[in-house]
Structure formats: structure tokens, C-alpha cells
Amino acid sequence: MTEREGAETARVSTRGRRPGRRPGAADTRGEIVTAARRIFADKGFDKATIRGIAREAGVDPALVHHYFDTKEGIFVAALRLPLDPAKALPLVLQGPREEIGERVVRFVLTMTADPLAREPVLALVRSATTNEKIVAMMREFLTQAVVTRVAQGLDIPPIRMEVAFAQMFGVVLLRYVLAVEPLASVGIDELVELLAPTVQRYLGEA
Image (tube, rainbow, N blue to C red; front, side, top):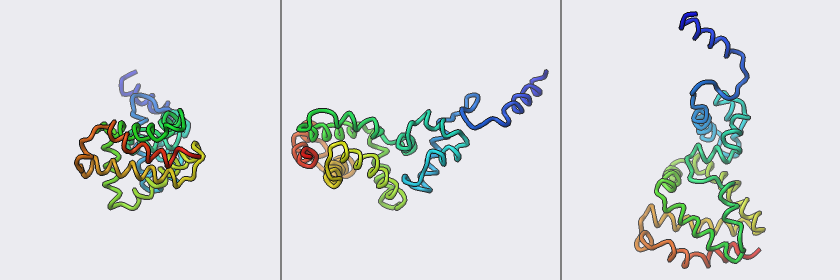
């Protein structure tokens, strides 16, 4: 059999396969992420589905679950966010309730201290100032993946998690986007000492 005949035979043998793990060295994960970006941009977080992303990528939904577990997981990958709330929040929430403020503040400040971790988030913030679709998409994601999950885990009204988030979000913006001094240069330990009591008041009591 010639090389050309062999290639033709290989093409014929793949016809009729159900969508799933693609043969060869194709970047299937990358194609799923690209498809997810299109779906999230078009439908937002709430209306996007694993099945719809799989259909856009031309793979079986089980393969999307194989790589990303959940819709939140693929959203994190598609937008290059620094962490998956489903994995990070349990680590922050576990431990003494009277120390939840310090844990939250230290976690946010430590994570955003890494330029590679914070840049995708800041890029989204910049885009959100001119793109309502991004605003809606991030609002849906934060509500479902962060605010609701923490509020349920701590048995507190969602508004208390939202004001705690607003506090930390404002600090990150002033520290890294506007670079307001001395906030931009002060050490993490000093900021934790200043901010933890306030966040503790929001989150510490059921």
C-alpha cells in the first residue's frame, strides 16, 4: 500500500465515529476552550451549557466534563481566570469562623500579588467599562460561583458577601490599576491587619 493509499484508508476509517476524544495530536482541549469563549460571549454565563459548548467544538459533552468538570471550570479556562471558585473557596471557608476575615483578605491579596494571576482579571475589568455583555457575563458568574456559594457556606445573606467582595475589589483596583500610594506599595501583612476586621464583620457572624 502506498503512503497516499494509507492516508486515505485512515480518513475513511474515522468516518461515522461518534464525537469524543479526537485522534492524533489535535489540541482538543484548546478547541473546546475556543468554542467556550464564543458561546459565553454570545449567550452569557447563565444560558451557556456544556452541551452547547461541546456541539460548538464538535465533541461529545463527556469530553468537556473530562477536561473541565463543570461549566464554571471551563469558564475559568476560557477567560483565563487565575482560579476556579469551586476549588479555591472550600480552602478559604474551612477553618475557624472567627478567622474568616483574615483568610479571605490574605487569600485575595496573595493571589492578586502575582502579575500573571491578576492581569486577566484586570483585563476583564477594563473591557467591562465599554462592553455590557462582559458586565452581564461576569455578574452572572460571580453571583452563581462566588456570592451564592459563600453565602450558603457561611449561612449569611448574600448582601454581606457582596459588600465584602466590593471592599476587596476596590482595594485591588486602587492598588494595581490606579496605583494609589501608599496603598500600591504597602505590604500584604499591613493590609491584612487593616482590612481583616472589616471583612470579618461582614462574614463572621451567621
